Each structure stands twice: as structure tokens, then as C-alpha cells.
Image 1 (cartoon, rainbow, N blue to C red):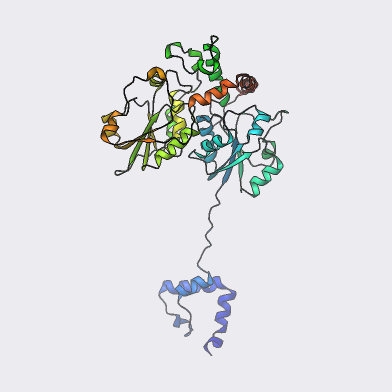
Image 2 (cartoon, rainbow, N blue to C red):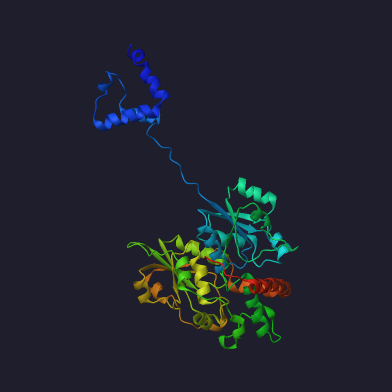
Length: 419
């Protein structure tokens, strides 16, 4: 039979596939008939390839690098966002651990924001892929094993500033020992301790025996002391580019516009921006400058314009911002940015001193493109600040402790490349 007659050929094909495959490929390229090999019946090459695997190279998909970074993320600010941006750049997928309230109290003092609020803020950042709630403050052997095995983490990331436990030991010592630790550059000019300090400083400088719950937040611009608003932040165009999406709306995109101060960027801001984004294809956010906020809200913002702009730009629901947006939405703005809808939340800062103002949304209302959005959370910058003021002594003690460690960090600080 033909199969038996040519059995040596078939044995050769299976025992020495690369040799036989080479012969067949050569024959095909030369345009030779298989009859050249003595009338041997051989399956056509296209049908031979899938079965033999001779000419197929196994596709090796590149392993996606998963990195982990944790933190308290209390009073979320652009420094946190920039740290997570840098961490994401060291891998393909970023998993973020949010330290529990209990661990924060034990290691740093009482948090200002609840776990639920901090989870909303972290999940709302454009660089975050997954979130682990109630993460431990210290990278223990047990938790590190869980990261590597359950969450498939390749590297653990932290900033160049030291993270010490109450006994003075390094919280990331085990990760470093395992060779699975990478370091990023700390963002200068801001920290949660700094923000708490700004609020407490404002209270201390303006308190003349008045009610502590009202004094620091409802002074007129003229009476606000400059020392309450000192910031070490040095804005650069490169940082703004790093946070920006770098894309404009498409020609037929439905552009939604929302404006505000967005001071002490909180969970309420994230939720209202998320809802606004769902109403269109492109979310444009107007951020009022410091002078506009002072004039219309009756108090200077805690965070400066560029600090607030970066916090908003870091939100995954935001496509673009107007840095220093006017108080009133004009016809020219609507035309220039091709705005289809203007929205505003039901919960916002309110001051009875300015009830006689003209409506900043009169133009979009007259055009039938204004919508009042129900705010998902009853949180304002003032309510967050008052949490600190109400627990004045606890936060003064917490800040004094943190201030010492930050002072030591800056005294020993050396240049760290990359950002």
C-alpha cells in the first residue's frame, strides 16, 4: 500500500520534523512538484502546517507587570496623585492599598476622611486599576505573601521619604529584603500634614476669642492672614502636561461643563464629576482662581489655583480643565468650547453675605442648556475643614509629631532622579 511503501517518509516527518519541513519549504519555494520525490503523496503544505507546528512559532505574550503602592490618602491632594502616576509608570497595572482607619490611628493619629471617602478618592484617579481596602500600614510577611500570590504583584512601590513604624523601623524593610521594592520621587510642596497645618494656622491666626468652628472659614478676604495660605508648591508646565489627557473633544462630541473651586478635593467632588461625565462625551471643568473664590465665597481657598487644578486633572472622569475660569458662564465661553450642557451640583459652598449676586448661569439657562445635578454626597470643603477644627487638639498633636519627621527628611534630603 502507498502508506506502507512510503512509511520511511512518514517516520522521517515525525521523527525529524524540522529537516522534513525544511525540505518541503524549499520545494515549495522552488516551485517543484511533490512528484519529484517519487510520486509520494504528501498533504499540501497549508494543511500540514497547523498539525505539525513546524512553521509556527509559539507566541509569547509579554507578561504584564503589576505594581503595588499603599497609603493613607487622607485629604487627597496632587502629591498623592503624582505618586500614583509615577508608580503606574513602573508597571502596566497599578494596585493601590488604602490603609484602614484603625492602622492610621495606631501609627499616625486620627484620619480626617473615612475609609469610604478615601476609597472613592483613590478609585477616582486615572492611573489606578485596582484598590485593596483596609490594607495594613506595615508590609508584613503575611501581607507580602498575599500580594505576591493572590494579587500577582511584581513590585512594591514607595516614595523616597522614609515611612517609619512607631518603633522606628522601616515599614518596607521586608519588601526591600525580598528585592521586590522600587522607589519613586516624593512630590515636593504638599502633604496631608501641610494641609492640616494650613487649616490650623488659619484658625490660630484669625481666632480672637470667637467660635472656633466658624472663624477660620468665613472671614472676608481682607481679614485673612497671608500666613494661613503659604504654599511651597512650585508649578511647572511639565507637571500639568503629565496630568493632562492631551486630547480635545471630537468634532461631534457632547461637551459638558461644570465649574467650581474644587478646594480640598474630596469624595463629593469625585462623585459629582462622575455624574457630570455620564451626561456627555467630554467633561470640561472650570476652576476659579484664588481671587474669584475669595470674592464670591467670602474666604480664601486652602489650596492654591494650580494645586486645585492638578487635583481635578488627576480625576479619571475629567477630560480638560480651564485654569482660572470666569465666575459667569458667558455666551463666548459656550461658543469657544462648543459646550452642549452646563451643570451644577445641589450641594456647594454657601455664604449668606453674597445672596444678592447675579446668577452666573443665566446665559446657559436662557439657552436651555443648564441642568442642576443632585449631589451624591453632602460634603463640602467647609465641612471637611470643620472636622479638623472640631478635633483641634488631636490634630495639633498629630501635626507636631509629623512635622518633626518631615523636618528630618528635608535636613537629610538628597536629589532623586525621575518624577
